[in-house]
Image 1 (cartoon, rainbow, N blue to C red):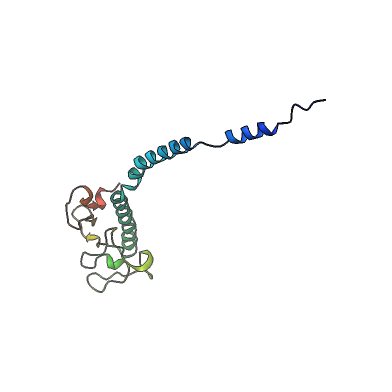
Image 2: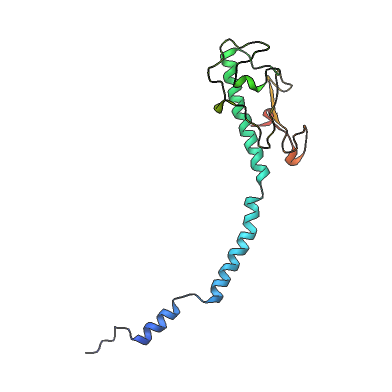
Length: 157
């Protein structure tokens, strides 16, 4: 009775040597990964300004919610003079709010800055509605273009 189903020592050596990857195969894989990273990386990482513009739009929507709650409680929006600070502390000038909410209307009890570190621009009554709320973008100046374009509450859908 011969045992032909058991592998020989020479067969094991050949099988284990064939099981690994060659240096050429590994280099090809690394080159492919490098090409993909070079193409995809900048596409993903190259949009920080777009992300900041999206964040500014979301902040504006959050401030709009706080302004609407302020109006529900007090009957009017804060004036331009009172500004957005009226959302975190009771105003002391202009029309004083009769039912200002304890704790204010914004989380963290402070008016956020836009993603570029600038104040939001608030005008009430506004030119485009009851109030206008804007971020002037990366340049901090009105009416820019591209990444410097203003983000305005009346243009956000």
